[in-house]
Image 1 (cartoon, rainbow, N blue to C red):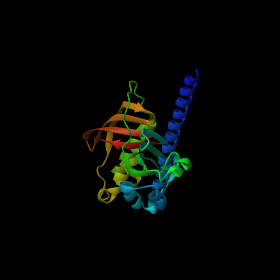
Image 2: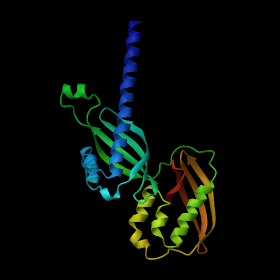
Image 3: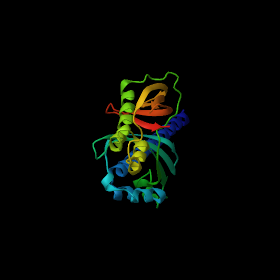
Length: 246
């Protein structure tokens, strides 16, 4: 009986320990992304090493944004390594909203001695890599969500802004890497409108999970038929954004 109680106590203790690690990784990753997105270069560098430190050193404080909401999930972890995905919603300096998808990798530094362990049993962890990715499309979706008026409207607004040659306005309807890519190519796109008009838009739902909806878009650009897979994301503000067009 005593052995059973001891084993149960050990299992509970180990479970609490691993849960503590899980929460610790979530907190570390969220704090790191807040520094990166907020433009806090020194703080981000102090938490980094290797490739991550190189990226943190390149932070431009002028491009900082304020965090509106943030979510994190631990994808893998051990006593020496962890991978966490972080999804922050932000307000940019121009007042528009955005969302990003990041993967943050950590490693634990060796303990300097028993004193290090007793003062900080989780250990000293540093960020070794950070990658921004497209929205995570995974999991089954047997019942696709309906295409809401907000989804159709944001796509219409995006294409209309492009037709007018207003690249800056069109980027406000994009999210994550899609927005950054368009802004990076703004000098090329500003040579003039890419087309005159769009017509006969039809959006058919393909998949949906959480705040993401994938759809098949068919439409005509200056009389030419176009088809694309478009992923939309629903922000906590109630806005829809275009996360990717392929």
